[in-house]
Image (cartoon, rainbow, N blue to C red; front, side, top):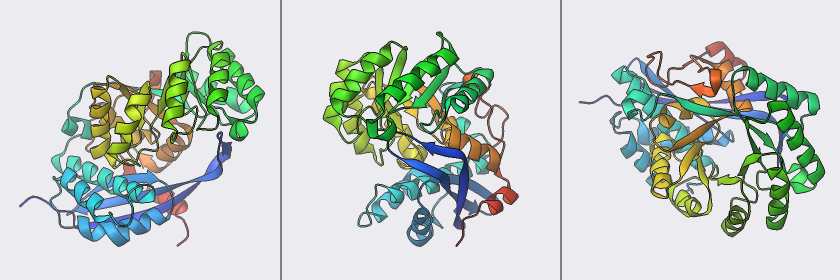
Length: 365
């Protein structure tokens, strides 16, 4: 009889930011992680998502009894069972995050039971996963932005992304000044990306994109709301930078709607249904002759990213990198702007939780 999960538990961890942070449409001073352990015998798999603390209640209250006792190796079947069980609850949003965290833990558990890195279980399409430095928050002053960009450059990064669209697009001049500053700091040879987080109107995004072209911006992420597919299409067709979106996809039909209107599809395994659905999103993107970019949570994505042939890159997002390096032993190194998941042969995602750190940042009950 194949092994079956005997226990699943969830922890809520709250990590303060190292400085005030904001993008075009949101400000925050902490990041919440919901950490999942799925155990079979003496082996435990790790999974997590970033989202509201109530995500943990979905895991322990609605998903746990459904998962415990199912065959460990049949991860897609368990993913499907979870998705069907939440029909009346509503799958998008934090429920999708809960499913994602459990699914990640089950993939990690399966690979650990088989004694192999997850990338080897999935089957590698590449051994190198390119990453881009992501941060450049609108709250950063000149020194903070310079320090961050120089830190990535010192690690050999050649791709950099900053946030623009400050104040819901009301500070255009500062957006352009910060983009100019970023270009001067990283040099002419590096790739410069910007992310408006949907802060601009359609015409505003097109107008600013023409100015951004002067600073060699080659990636314009969410120039308008990702809910405005018509607007994304209009911007994409009017600008030279690649237009990207997809991070708010909670199911595969979302990506089917998004793929025809972007130059590069984004997907977040901590939101969309985890590795199971993320791999399907990669196949969907490839069917549209698109590349896929992994959004945030780099240690969730790294092994799966190495398993898809149409990967463009993975986001080395400041908040999540800081948290994952603090919380986990076995965190990956991005030297040269490249990750090598599975290289050291550790099973699963290759991570173990530092229990003292988890306890230190445990959210109050």
